[in-house]
Each structure stands twice: as C-alpha cells, then as structure tokens.
Image 1 (cartoon, helix red, strand yellow):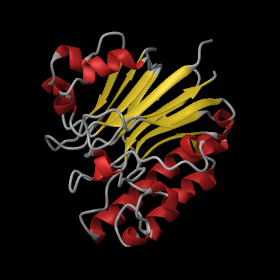
Image 2 (cartoon, rainbow, N blue to C red):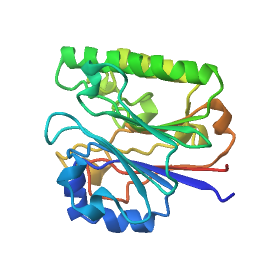
Image 3 (tube, helix red, strand yellow):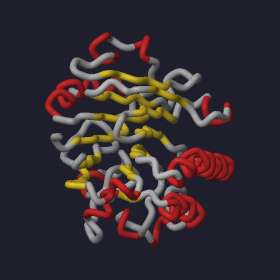
Image 4 (spheres, rainbow, N blue to C red):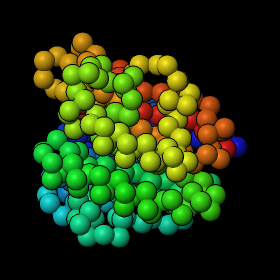
Length: 257
C-alpha cells in the first residue's frame, strides 16, 4: 500500500481561499485526505467544483450562524461513515467537528474554539476540549486507531510561538489552555510534528498585523495528532509556511499504512 498523505489547513473562509487558488492547490497537493477549518460557508452556498472537488469525496459540517466556523474533509476514499458534532448542542451549533470513519482509522477534523474574546470564551474553549477528550478517550482506551487534525488554537510549548514570555497571559498560550491540551497527550495522542521534529521551530499562524508573517513572528496552532499505534508509522510531518492564501498555513502528515 502506498504511503497516505494528510493535510490540514485553516483556510479562513473557503470562498476567499478559492479566489486565491485553493482548488488548484488541492489538485496539486497529492494528498489523500485534506481537512479544512473555518470554512465560513454551508455547502449549498458553494459552486459545485468547490462543494465536491474532482477526485475527492466531500463531507461538510457548517455552523448555524452564517459565515462562521465550519469544517470540511475531502478524501480520495469514500468514508464508511460520517459523523458530526460532539453530541452537545452547546458546541454543535458552531459546526466544529467532523468525523470520517475509514477502514484504517477514525479521522477527526476539528476547529477548536478560540478564547480571544474574553474569559467566558476561554471557559467555553476549555469545556470543548474536555468534551472532545471525553468522546475520544474510550476509543483510545479500546486501542482504536485515530487521527485528529485541525486548528487547536493553543501553542503547547514555548518552542511553539515566537514570543512566549510576552504572551503567557494571552489566550492561546495561557497555562490553563496549555494544561488542557496536555491532557490530550496524557490520554495517548501523539503530536506528529513534534514527534518527528522535537527541536524545530516552525509556525502555522501569523497575525495579519505588523507584517508578522514576513518577520515570522508566529504561533504553531495547527496540529495533526495520532493514536499511539500510528506514531511508529509516521514517515513525514511538516508545516508549510510557503503556502499562502490564509493567515494559517497547511500542516501535513505522511503515514506508512
């Protein structure tokens, strides 16, 4: 079996990304599965080739609020089953979770909430983290193979952002958020990029202000996590700042299955 290539990208609006060449990038990506977050659209609002890109089976989960949140997964192989949400209306109205069941693993595409709107939203984000972990922990305990991708909206360690000391009180690097993400690793999930590159500084998000991307003053907020059984099958894991079109860049994983 050929290696399997996975890409995850917060596109910051699928229609805006399409105007910047998303479909051309997708066609040239060579990816077997592409997960996008922050689509900001329901599929019925999109042109056919964007809703169902050639060569891929498309699955969508949109927020109830127009122009907000949303995720989509494009896969070469048709999923055995597609599930949406966390089973809690408090979270599911925001269209943040899409699970595709494949023979080799369950694939979770998740747009985790940001906490940058204040304490109430940080609390919501932490509750979302806990609810998602409650969902997947039994699967990990049973030895199910999982791949979890998406914009996690937290930089876990100081190496994962350019200016850690200045941002210790900023949502996305607050100790309580980092501790909550650490629970994912304690449950057994493996950060594929950090597993493959323990000492590499690469970022996946830059503020659109003050030329942050040009100066590489960024954060690593986008992750591809695997269950422990897949960690030994990682052939490559990377971050692709050369790909523009969003304030985030794609992250990738190649697995030997």
